[in-house]
Length: 87
Image 1 (cartoon, rainbow, N blue to C red):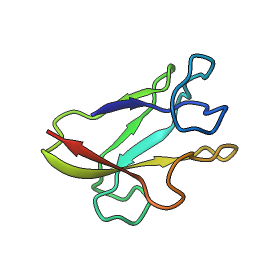
Image 2: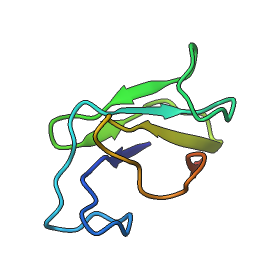
Image 3: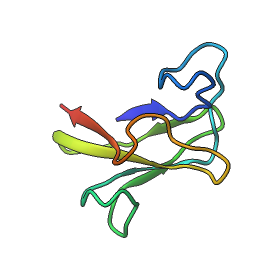
Image 4: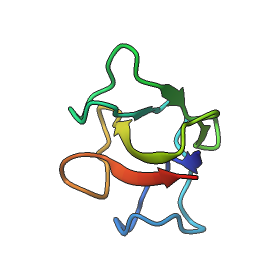
C-alpha cells in the first residue's frame, strides 16, 4: 500500500503537477476507527517527496489516516480516514 502526502493547492484531493509532496507526515492504518494513531497500529512517515509505503498488509478493507501538521489540514473526508482495499 503506497501513496503520497502533498500540498493540495486547489483543494480537490488529487495530485496536480504544480503541487509538492510533504515530508515527515505520519500516515497510519486506523484499525479501531478512532481517527488517531494508537499503539499497535501500523504507521509510516512520508519521505522528502511526500511518498509513503506500507508493506505486508493483510488483504481486505483498511482505513488510512493522516496526522496533519499543525499548519495544515487534510483534504477529503471531514471525519475519518480514507477507505482502501488491499488485494
